[in-house]
Length: 187
Image 1 (cartoon, one colour):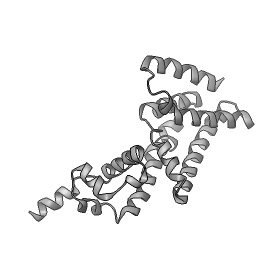
Image 2 (image 1 turned 135 degrees about the vertical axis):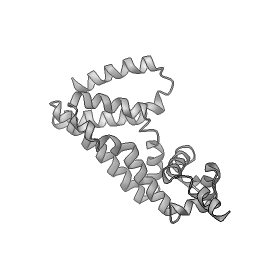
Image 3 (image 1 turned 180 degrees about the horizontal axis):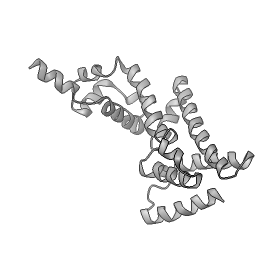
């Protein structure tokens, strides 16, 4: 029986805990990220949490790393993306941000960053990673100076807010406008 209970507690992966915590952050804010609550939502006992994390603070630190990696580095550190020419890389980046909902927790992270200096530093690093990635693309496309910086920032801001602002766009309209937006960015 103890072995069976132990296996049940280990049945929820670290990634599942982090995904549920990030979902909670997105819908209710960081204050709502509580061990008991997450365990109940995952259908597991509280002790299952301690298989993966030391305490709530450890979970929150891993949550920041998870967000930075799975919602930014998945593009910026991708060897496949680095092999693409700049024009295609920009288009694929635009598609991935939308299709994989990579910006869906940015608003919540920014809200959390306003009240926690450590989170603020992580959010700044993620923004820098994103901007540096875009700067490389726009530089390869032939832009420099303020023109390059404006395009990188505009691209980042638009794609961070697009899902929040234009939630009702149908896929045909979205695809058409995405192609036009891509053309605008590269010319």
